Image (tube, rainbow, N blue to C red; front, side, top):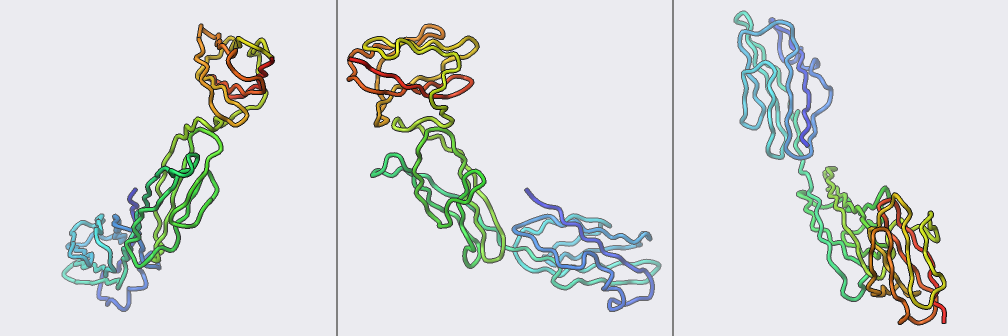
Length: 277
C-alpha cells in the first residue's frame, strides 16, 4: 500500500531571500520512503501566487499549488519551489529533502522433505535490493520461530497454519510475506482435538469385538471420522453413514486400544475405543 507524505512549505512573499526563509519548511526532517511512493506537497501561504512551479528533483515538475508527485526510483532528491507575486520572484530550496530507499521483497517456497514425511522445508527466495539483509525472521502466530533464511518445520497435528516471513535490508526497509498452508498428514491428529469429550455423542458398544456405532448428537453434523492405532496409523474401516449415525465393522482388528478422531461442524475431539477379545 502506498503512503502519502505531506510536505508543508511555508512561504513569505516579498523581498526576501532563501537564507531568510529556509527555516520555515515543515516538517523539520527529510522525507524517507521505502520503495516508490507518492509525496503530497502543500503550499500553505494564504496569498495565491501569480505563478508557481515545483521542481521535484527527479525531472518532474508541476504548476499546481498543492501537487502530488510519485517518486518511482530510488535516490536522494532536492525539491525547489519557484513563486512569483506582483512581479517579485522567490525561490525556496530544500536540499536532499526526499530520500527513496530500496525496499526488499519477501518470498519463499515450501517443499516436502522425503526423509521426514511429517516435516516441510521453508526456503527464502527473498531479494534485499540493497547490500544485504538485516534479518529474515519466520513467524507463526505471534511468535518468531526461526531467524535463518531457511527452516524445517515438523508438525504434530493436522490443520491450517499461517506462516510469515519478515525481512529487512541494511537500509532499514522491511517487507513481509504470509501464506496459509493446510497440513493433512494421515499420521497426525487434527488441530483443536479435545481429548475424551463426547458432548452427548454416543459411541457404542465400547468395548467392542465387532461393530462400532457413533451417534452424533442432534444439531451437529459429521464432517470426518478417523480411526487410528496407538502409533497414530490411520486404519481403513470402510464405515457407513446414515444421517448422524456412523457405523463400522472392527471385527478384523487386533484387540487393544484405538482412538476415534471425530470432526463435526462445531468441534473436533477424540475418544478411546477398546477392541476386546
